[in-house]
Length: 313
Image (cartoon, rainbow, N blue to C red; front, top):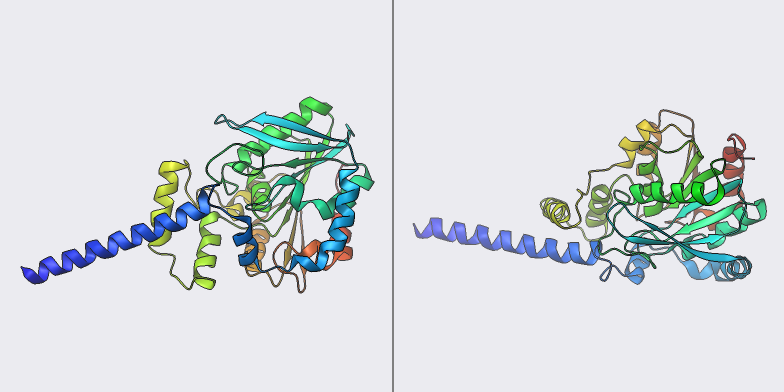
């Protein structure tokens, strides 16, 4: 009996440790007050200091434009914030940022592409980020429904004839890909995803394995249950590689081949699952979210060719 008691006690202790570890990982990752941009940037490993002069120039030009704070209400009652730049009722791009970032940050560089071409830009703060409400990060699974709200906002603001692009980076890239599987309005003519991941569960698995040298099981199984109970969705409930199979609009995928945060293999998997029109650009030597800055010419050429085949102009 003593041996059995010891085994039971050891199992209980191990279970308690696993639960405590999962709770720690969950809180620092899924809850906005604990998800820190500095930690994300360190994990992503991209050296942004080398691009500061370029970004400063682009930001000054962007900030000189007329801007307006705009809001929508999510389906679960959150007040979501966005920044509207420009006033062209004919064409616009809705931009979705990465994890722990905000709308005004991630598209500084690309504003120099879109604004001179006459696009209205809507820079969204995804739920639990920036000036949007929310306690739990949506990791695209919840944000895809928020994207529908923003699409409706643009139609109401500029009219039924406005033509839209969805462009996302990292978590925003996953968001727009997950949105592609929904019944989206025909105003959306194309989707651009830069370093988007397949699902929260799969990107967490990669991070645990490569950066923390920890197995995903049972840690993520516990976190998945926590998230279902608290945030209302499973970590693999929505997977971009599955959602794009239902996409009815063309998709452009962009990814850096040196990305260690969201492995480029996810880009290849998503691409293989797209049944409709698609293009892919892999930027050599680019780390996470660095593709535009690493090879601006290739990035803009890919966008020109992609958008040129759409009904935008």
